[in-house]
Length: 86
Image 1 (cartoon, rainbow, N blue to C red):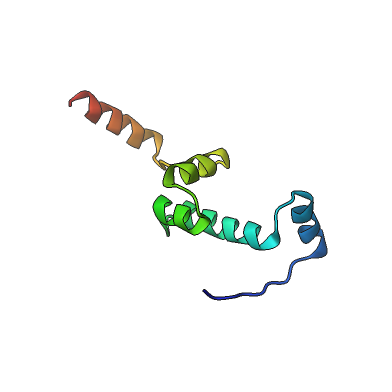
Image 2: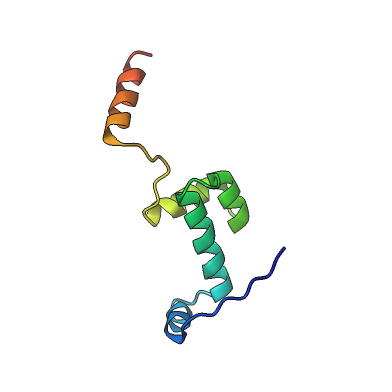
C-alpha cells in the first residue's frame, strides 16, 4: 500500500470533521467513487476497495447519484424492445 499526503484547506477539513468522517476515509471513498463513475474500475473492485459487498456498493453509489446502468434513453428503449422478443 502506498501513502500519499495532500494539503487541504482548513475549511474543507472542518466540513469533513463536522460530518464525523475522517479525512483518510473520505478521500478513499471519493477516489473510489470517481474511478467507478468514470468506468475505470468495476463495481466489484470498488466494493473491494471500500470493504463492502458489491450490492452494498451499488446501493451506496446509487444513493449518491451514481447510476449502476449508464444508458441513454434510446439505449433503454432498444433494450426494452429486445427483451420483449425473448
